[in-house]
Image: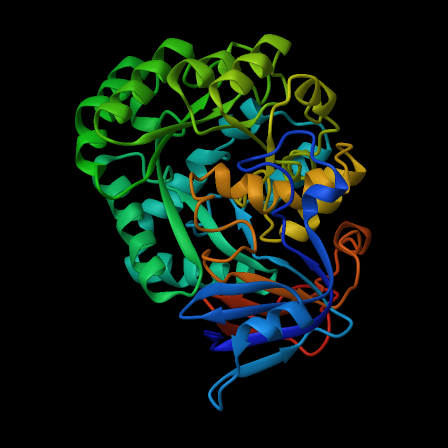
Amino acid sequence: MKERCDLLIRNIACLVTAAGGKRGPLSNPKWEDLGVVENGAVAIRRGKFVAVGTTAEVESRISITPKTKTLSGRGRLVLPGFIDPHTHFLFVGTREEEYAMRVEGVDYLEIRRRGGGIRKTVRAFRAASDEELLDAGRRRLDSFLAYGTTTVEGKSGYGLTTEEEIRALRLMAQLNDTHPIEVVPTFLGAHEIPEEYEGRTGDYVRLVIDEMIPRVRGLARFCDVFCEKGVFEIEESRAILDAGKRHGLLPKLHAEEFVSIGGGELAAEVGAVSADHLLAVTEEGCAAMARSGTIAILLPGTAIGLAKRVFADVERMRRNALPIALATDCNPGSSFTESMSVVLSLACSLEGLTLPEAILGATRNAAAALGLLDSIGTIEVGKKADCILLRATHPAAIPYRFGTNLVETVVKNGLPIRRRRRPNLVGPTV
């Protein structure tokens, strides 16, 4: 019996399923792992893919009814919706003046001394109303969506009190319920030492462990820590992540962004789903993460936002067969972008990723970095029908056309929820 479908996308010039090769996240992927189908088609019913293949194959398996909607893929590239596994999108206010200082050589500690840095965003967050935060978050999600992102991870970490951290997670849940994008919440109470705890890091760590973590249980999927020299060091980070695990929060961590202190090894030790940044990760750290199944999330946008020319050692990760994912790190201080296409351009041209590494890093491996590869990240029968149509016929067009938004149509849970008639050369219309 043929499968009925609600939406058929047919005659796709280049369908990238991201489903080639072995199962699970991939290290050192090759072109065949992209699972490319020429003159492809996908059929969708009740929010899931029910047929994937060539147009002839798919049309032979499905029943088209008067209620079936069709989209033409002629001259189009189709791939899974982008998945952004590391963002801090819920914030108000901007810090562009800090960028101006950084390009003149002013370091973070001096910017912080002048009242900037994460603490500036914390002050703005605490002063904002729920309505202001929801409006800012909603507009930012609109922008992600316009650039083809269908699932986004969102971190707390700009409240830094128990009630403010709970508020951040509660507002993200509200946005998840009312916006087409799926928001995956992460608790990041250990993002910075708040001003009122200056010189009392131990007291703040105890607050995070004893009060915050028990109260955010059920509001977040992950517990994250900014594990860095001078912020939360190894022992403090381990204690926080272990506490999160006791309360059902899966561990993630910001690791080795500036100096190597053993963050990669800690990620492996605690069984972290991902370790992010990794500009200074060691050979031993990469090997340990690969053994533990931890995904490396690279955030090349921070090289732009921090005005530095430092990138992750991708070759070291390849040698250790460490799967790589990509993310925007969207935040007001170090990487203010919602565009995964821009991230792909930076990853390929500046960090040296191959096209298969970049495409799978923004889809399949990014889904694994959120523990969601069983439901999203590839175009396969049974998975959520999240995909994007672009005005291109080759996946290399995405990083090649840097700064250009080629996304024409976004399909989320089987619904075409955004249509564009022409590529936007500047930014999304929100």
